[in-house]
Amino acid sequence: MSPRPGISERSLPIMLLRAREAVMQRFRPMLKAHGLSEQQWRVLRVLDERGPTAPTQLAAECVILMPSLTRILAHLEAEGLIHRQLQKADKRRQIAALSDRGRDLIARISPESAAIYAALEGDFGADNLQDMMAALRALIATLNEQPQSGQ
Amino acid sequence: MSPRPGISERSLPIMLLRAREAVMQRFRPMLKAHGLSEQQWRVLRVLDERGPTAPTQLAAECVILMPSLTRILAHLEAEGLIHRQLQKADKRRQIAALSDRGRDLIARISPESAAIYAALEGDFGADNLQDMMAALRALIATLNEQPQSGQ
DNA sequence: TGACGGTAGTTAACATGTTAATTACACATT
DNA sequence: AATGTGTAATTAACATGTTAACTACCGTCA
Image (cartoon, rainbow over all chains, first blue to last red; front, side, top):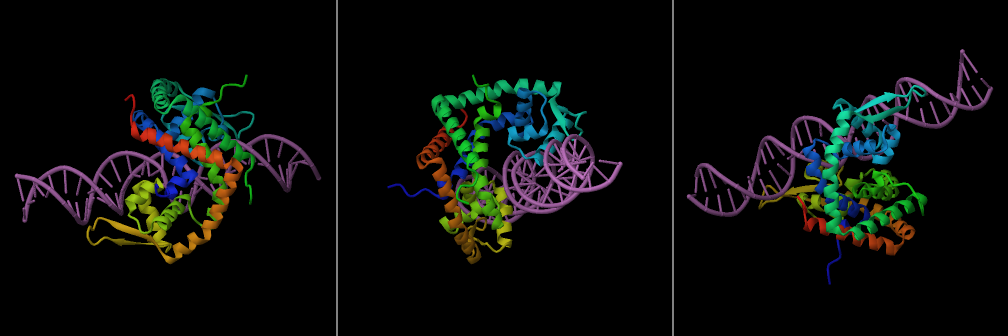
């Protein structure tokens, strides 16, 4: 009989955190080599994929809260990786977009990132990975549809 | 044909983060009501389950880095929820343990936590939850066994 | 015993997470 | 135009994440 696992192995939030840590360990050396934080990388990738984007939408896509995003965008802008423009129609809004330097950086990083992800997929199994992604989507959908069951 | 999902839905690390956020949303109101952060709660639960524990082991179980744990333990000690003792045999080491107040707090929180977790299990499905936990364990095991495949 | 390498925990410095408050603006109503 | 309501983004204040440097200590071996 194996002993009962500890809380950190029975708790879904902690297991999700552990899994994320395990995955990110493979990406951190690459990010560090390019001088990017995990969050900065997320922002740049979304900007690369979606084109010019408003901060509010970036925050939702990147799972970053607005106050953090404000600082991250200021940092990226100071580094010359993005630029921002205020909307003429609605002066509250702004649009962030990659600069040429930002695009170059993404172009250099993307192949490395893809290679790491492919290696991960190879190690874990493509089917297992797809199953896990589907399960995560289902979990998120369940929780978003029934926000506070039993409360 | 549905459009190709964005990066934030194709990336395993982001999906793990999203899932964790979705789950934690259900626990945050309860934690806030008791004045605990998510991390403080993790530390207290592990101390409750394992008894007096060294910080290094706490850090591993709670998935908290040592510098963060140092501050968290100092905070919990200042709040009177734990106390610490230096080892006589090896003066580098210390042992953290719940105080009576800490035990009382855990005793009050545990039923609420269990109820939220049970509701979550009911909404997502006990089988689905077990499958996901198993998949997460498998992913973590894979990544820990093959730390840097292809590098 | 004394230099050496390794370990537990802390400190420092900066980035991000988190909640609340605040600013600046848009829009609708009066 | 004046008011109220709501929204996008920022700021503030504090906790935590993250890496590097540092302190104090252990054990070993010359």
